[in-house]
Image 1 (cartoon, rainbow, N blue to C red):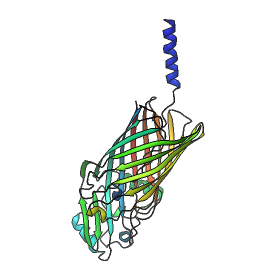
Image 2 (image 1 turned 90 degrees about the horizontal axis):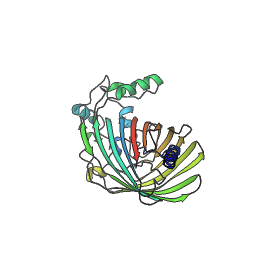
Image 3 (image 1 turned 180 degrees about the vertical axis):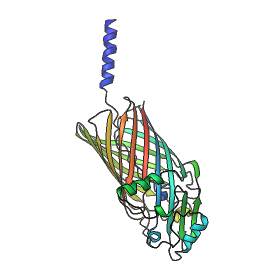
Image 4 (image 1 turned 30 degrees about the vertical axis):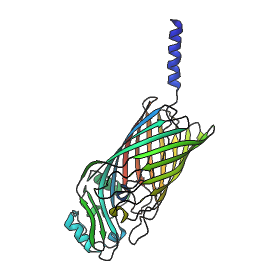
Length: 356
């Protein structure tokens, strides 16, 4: 009996001393409207979870997008003011103001993206994973707090006070005519899945490096119109335990985008490069803050009145709250650092991760 009690006590203490799971870099994603159809770089955690182990992560992201081509900002119509509501008639009038422009856009929406990612350790060095996303597009309710933030800190965004709040409008314009327009909310729809592989190529006492491969098959149409092609991504993702209480993560990947349907190809997507750099603190082991920088190169060919070919930089700030040795809650806030009209304005995300 004493032996059994001692054994149980020893196992209990061992479980208490077990390390919390290393979460790695966050799967930050640029939520800009034009990046919903193609595969877009997301950092991949480089540490294998162990042969036979599983990890499931449920994530919900809310992103606010209010962006339009510089031509509209630099040469706004006279009526483009006073909390104007952008219905189809207004969009047609807006398009008519720019008959010589080969391509301009007007995006005002809120995107809710919900994903389930399941990861499996095949061996001690190799994991596979699959991500199943769903998206809802609507007017949302983030416009007011974002405007208040801009007023408070002096980061005015031209156009917000000229447009009615909480609209859902997606429009592209070519030579003075609407090329594509979607008004109102879009119900939740399944998006193309992601399938990935992580293989550790090096591991030392304080650092490691893994090769990553991701594929996105073209199974769905975004906004009911844009079907991407086969997208493939290859890259490297690594970590360095700089001190006992701090870890650095870094990585990069090249995304090759295949050709899709006619509507998709007319947007002139190009392949691009993504990268991340992450600091994660571990002084309080149960609550671990992090700061992540997320870079994405331009994703379209250069064209007048647009900056879609230029790179973007965003920050992802938040914390992991380990509920126990298997379950972790993560909260984060993403915002753009560069202002090239090719990112979402702000995103808020929450995740629940469970290892078993």
